[in-house]
Length: 230
Length: 90
Image: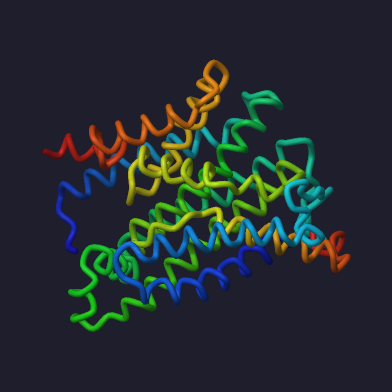
C-alpha cells in the first residue's frame, strides 16, 4: 500500500512542479530541477528528526498489500517480482499505447511544440501529464528501493545517482521503450566491475557518456536499428 | 505522424529486444542465487529512474533529475512512519 501511496503522492507533487516548469523556456527548467533537487537534499539534511538526515531511516516490511491481496516478502524473490512485474507492465503499456491518439499527440508536442499548439492541442497540459507520470515512476522506484535496501538516507540521492540515470537512458537509447532498461543492463554491471579495480569510477562514467554522445547519440537501440534502416 | 513500413519494422525489432529483456528479467530468480538476484533487483530500481528520465526528456522535453522524485518518496515514507501507521500501511 505504501508503494501505491508514494506513487500517487509523487505524481501529485510532480504535477504541481510540472505546472511551474512547463512555463519556463530554454534551459531554465533544467536549472530549476537541479536547484529543486539540491534544495530538497539540503532540506532533508536539515530536517534530521524527520528524514534521519545522513544517518537515514530503517525501512522494513514483512508483507505488502492489504488483507487477502497482501504478499509475504521473502528474502529476495518476492521483492524481486514486486520490482519486475510492474516494470514489465509499464513497458507493455508503453509499447501497446504507441498507436493511441494521446501518445501520437504527445510525440507531436515533443517534436514541435509550436506546431502542436497551432493545431489546437493543449501543449502545457500534456507536458504536465508526462511530467507527473515521470515523477510517479521515479517515486515508485524510490519506494521499492527503500523496501529493497531496508535503509535509506539523504546521501543516497546525491548527484551521482541522477547522472547515472541519465547515462542509462542515453546509452540505451532516448525515446525508446526498452532502451533505458538495456542501458542499465550494460552500464550498471560495468560500473561495478570498474569500481572494483579503479577508485575514480565517475571518470569512466563521464568518458562513456562523452563516447556515447559522439559515436552513437541515439543510444544502442537507436543506433542499431536506425542504421539498418538507412 | 503517420508510420511508414520502415518504422513498423523498427518497432518490430525493438519489440523482439524488449521481449528478450522481459523474459530474461522474469526468469532471473530461477537461475540466479540470492546475491545476484539482489544485484539485478538494484538494476531494476535503476531502470525505473532511467525510464522516468527518458519519459520526461524525450516526451516532455524537460531534463529533470529523477532523484527529486525519489527523495519525495522517502519523505513520504518517513511521515507515515512518524504517524505510526507503518504496520497498517505496508
